[in-house]
Length: 418
Image 1 (cartoon, rainbow, N blue to C red):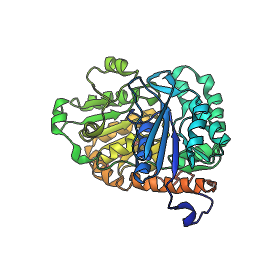
Image 2 (tube, rainbow, N blue to C red):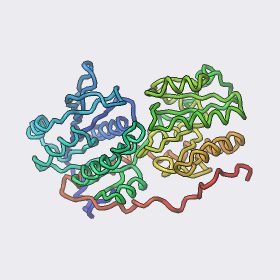
Image 3 (cartoon, rainbow, N blue to C red):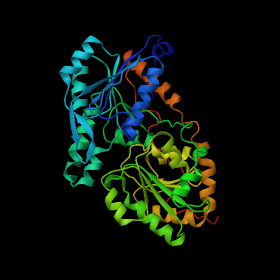
Image 4 (tube, rainbow, N blue to C red):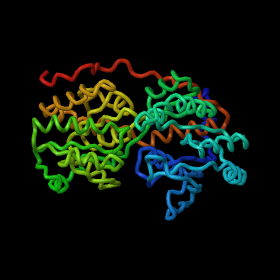
């Protein structure tokens, strides 16, 4: 994250920050945004900063959490279309002004562009509180998968208008920063993502779990972790599995996660194993007990499941963009296909499984390749930006905003015989 040349004393103040996070989703909800924001709040609280989280109440049983350094505030909301398990927050400007007038934050971080986020932006402006935002979801791309392509441009324009009213927009990779800047976003900086390598680790592999899947030590297990929804491009996982199973009939396919496509996927592939949502140790065991992770989504800004799979010792096959494009080196710790070339993605998976040496080589390197992607480092950088923002320094454009053009070409499936 780059800021306007603040000195060390400007960014590393002894006082504790008062940090307000406004979000549509938060732990223990199961999605990448909730996990990321939960880690941020948790780590800042551990550093003894005073953290306020404003989020929609998800159910009548949902109660706000209160600890010494982290306080949740719940607002009213209603279910998100096609995501009935989540709610978007109603505007809460009056409530936010009341809370922030009584306990004024040093910085407000808005992680939702919905009505709650818009009202938070207006409240913070009225109280003259510095505001940053983070870009988590390509909502304009989602609309294409739900019969609303006519909304692509209006949503894209609204998102740009929203984020350009904040002092900084945080994006997860250099590629996303470059795309946002090219689309007219101002003051975009990188906020990387970490992975818990103590939770996700090859040692979590479970022979008992593999046996429950009907897989022997020699059998290939393909896994996909994530929401089972149209925007995740799940049908390509089935296509790749079908092609691989023709060559290796004992291959197993495991889906971890839930969503509106579960029933149709089960009908299309009755031999697939649907494990549902998993968390904690159970999730880690599912990752580590597989061999190959296929991730065909094209709507991610990052995709936290990719570093989790790498940390678990899997060979990851994905498109060359988002998390995969930034942390996978083709043929070393995973395999990449050019963006939106589905045939190449399937061929890459099929070629790899026809020569398991490349899968084994990638698995040997995957966990080590992600070892330095620790949340502590991410939070240290965020903390520096928060102090700078609180002290009046406006972040500048990221010096590393251009995607890496020196990566090995993945125009064709790799030749596994060389």
